[in-house]
Image 1: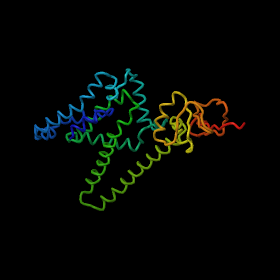
Image 2 (image 1 turned 30 degrees about the vertical axis):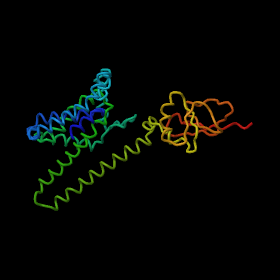
Image 3 (image 1 turned 180 degrees about the vertical axis):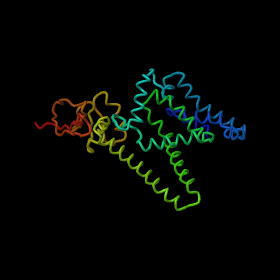
Image 4 (image 1 turned 90 degrees about the horizontal axis):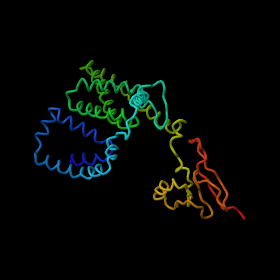
Length: 306
């Protein structure tokens, strides 16, 4: 079952790297090697055959379209500027005094979270003989080249970062418990500031990202809110030729909405790109938004009175 799940997950971009980390850890870690040796050879053979059957279509697709393989691996089609990428990574993760916002708010993690991440990494290195440390460190080593080649792939670091945060908090709790091995009151007293720390980190992070992506002027302009602006009673939506595929897909999930490139009926709505003079129609209303520099997003046309 694990082999089948692993094979299916290969169809997701960058999902091969945690699987690669598991494979490397299984080869190198003595406990995992021992666990694999204890498995039935019949079960291992069946799992391997099932995995190969699921991987075969993917191999055929990559053989015909090699660019798909690069996409799944997260590799760029052209060799990037490594120095520029490293500078971008430093700004994304470590320049806390110069926050910037484009399609991504940076730094990705707050200063408090980065300190705990560093503590978690230190704990993993100190306990590198454990299975968990093997897996996480191997995963990080696999992802490091991808992040350097594609700094925009910040999402791939999310799950390992959560694991490092957990390791860092565990290290703090363990250290406090070692100070007071027999005093339950001191242990409870030490947990209270840790709880406050976690709540503050979570609360500030949520506040930063929820309100930042909604209201930060440098971030909000990079995302379209046009779908929310379409009036509920719209029956015909006139769009530009390059907008047809997107809004046709939208119309499948919005009952009664017809996507067209020509005017029809007594009333219709046109997108900003499709706005022009429609013979026999006049602009009745302009729908605007404060989230875009081009604030006029939709135009409501009605038949001109004779």
